[in-house]
Image (cartoon, rainbow, N blue to C red; front, side):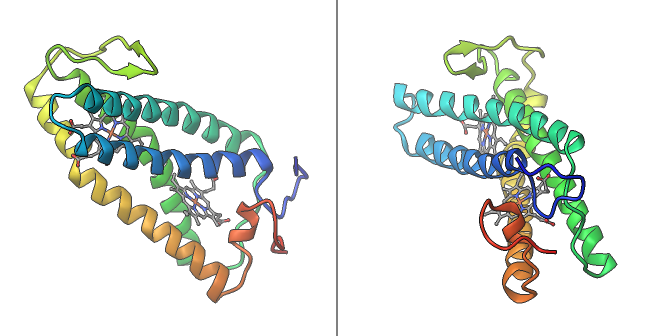
Length: 186
Ligand code: HEM
Ligand code: HEM
């Protein structure tokens, strides 16, 4: 594991956390669209939803571990860039971490706020921490519905565009320090 006091790239565990979060987000979008495509009221539809819920809860746990690890391990210093760009990157990373913490909570609330529904974690029914509420369920159709989807995709799109811009237009090695191969930026 690359853990010197002034690392040039993200350490192995930070990279592993970063790319597993990306993979799990893809899995969440895929399981949601497979659920959407399954026949209404079918067992298959419930199975896809349960897998979506399980993956979302797992992502929540991974993001907590990721944030703790990023506080505990030495992180590379920001690469030279204009002040506004450094602030924008910091804010985007903060919002991405916040989104990946809050979206699963809203998903959980979307399930349990509906009468007779429980959140599933790989076959185990999780306790419902709030009482059923039509008002809460309606709010969760916003915070864990299409508006959330639009917000998340815009944020990730901005982040990916910035990473690619830095790597291929500015050629400052930004992407390479989040990958185990390539030239780490000095
Ligand atoms: C970061 C994690 C998650 C992401 C990115 C995510 C993403 C999504 C997306 C894109 C939708 C479709 C929204 C729409 O078009 O209305 C959705 C629906 C849903 N998600 Fe998640 N989700 C996550 C975690 C969770 C968790 C942890 C749960 C529950 C424990 C959950 C439960 C649901 C439910 C119940 C729906 C609605 C399904 C329906 O329409 O019947 N999600 N999610
Ligand atoms: C293909 C998609 C992605 C690419 C190419 C990418 C690329 C990168 C790169 C190059 C960095 C390092 C930036 C720097 O050193 O200043 C980074 C950091 C980061 N990325 Fe991504 N990223 C992607 C998707 C995501 C997604 C979906 C999230 C959502 C949670 C995310 C969250 C973060 C965070 C929070 C950081 C800050 C460093 C850390 O805490 O690990 N990225 N990303």
